[in-house]
Amino acid sequence: MSATDALKPATPAVLAAPGLWGGRLAGFKGPLLVIMLLLGLQAALYLWWMAPTSAALAAQEIRSREIRTQIQALFLYQDQHRRLDALTKRFPSKKLLPKTIGRLSSIGQRVGVAIPEMNFVPAKIASPNWAKVILQFNARGSYASVRRLLAALEGGAEPFVIESIDLQKDRLSGQVIAKLSVGVYARDDE
Image (tube, rainbow, N blue to C red; front, top):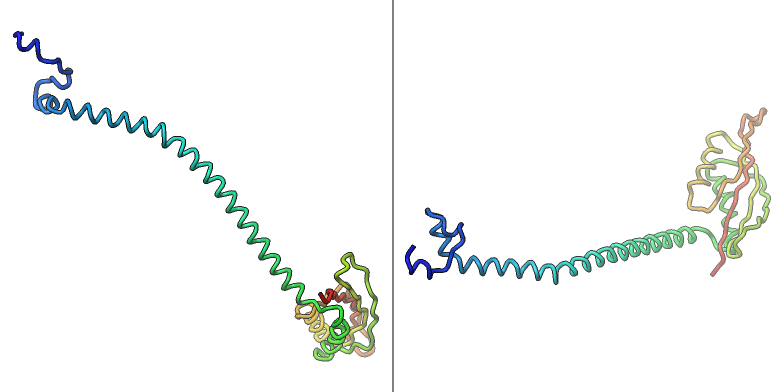
């Protein structure tokens, strides 16, 4: 070893390795140190800035999901409220209750069922905003016409609720006699 060799700074073994790669790596000592420093700085910045930000972002995402759930519940409530309003509007007001009951006779005539008389029984209901009347009557006709009457009562736009049915057959005429109890609900005029 010469005196000039002793004054040269020592190079790591990898960089001083003989051969093609050893010579190329020896020329990159300075840039390699800069790259290592930059990677260390990037790791420090990540730990100092990004890790707390990631935790805050995760907390914000959880809060966002909670708010989204609350909004969906609000939309569901509004939809159910609209449906309830639409259903409520199907029922007649208390003033129109006699006309609604009168339409029951016209439905019977339309389907070919005779309804000779009706009894009206006011029923108690828990809500002061609603009234209920029970109509009790005998519907007389063929089996098909009585079946059409029941379908018209249950499936029509009118707010009739069949509460009880007792079917009998008249032995002399062969007609069906349906003893019906039908509930009619009415809402307040407000």
